[in-house]
Length: 291
Image (cartoon, rainbow, N blue to C red):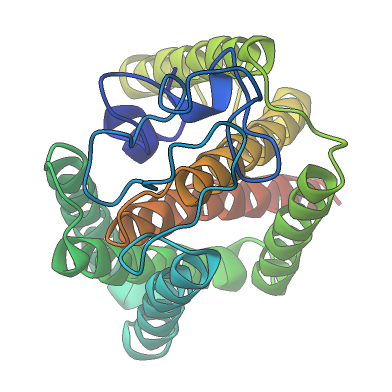
């Protein structure tokens, strides 16, 4: 089983195509279930970073080279910090006045394409590359800075700070709900999120094709009542992605993933937060534009 996050779904915190979070035997208090083979449900049992205590039911002590929550937090802070820094720079330095609006769009779209290429390259690499991940974050920040400046200047003044606060609120809410076990990531939950995400993306692609060939707003999924509905759905899907990502991180720490995997966690979490921010920005723009 894999996460819905495009990074985790390519590699994830697993070996032999397994997913630690959905094995039949769940770890209890940091160790395998009593009576179970301690390595049957441990996807890292065959790698040098895996815990070496073979006593049934014994807590698994991570080695010095194993990933920790602090590693994930620090790498995520670096990646998100790069996104924010380049977004602010692009907002301040790139023109968004009517005379140079086309230039701004070209720069923004170009940065988005570079970020997409870097994310795809990283997704197909065997090991996380900090240079690729931070490069992705830098170009993604340029795109976000340009699109945010355009939206704030020409569509809805002040909407950017609202979208940022909304993204932070979603992250905090999902994290609290996950830690309190109000959200339980199960096989059924994973299947539902994946099916919903595929349906959502398919509709967005169809809408884009109609907009390109028929003009206007296509099927209307990006404006009006339908736009509001799909904006809410997009944010809810982003929240579900966060829950899946938290589960992947939790399992990676529990089963002794290599420390370098913290970069992969940061990459995936950043992509999910960018998704939520863009959906929030679009939803708020529609709501304010209708006022």
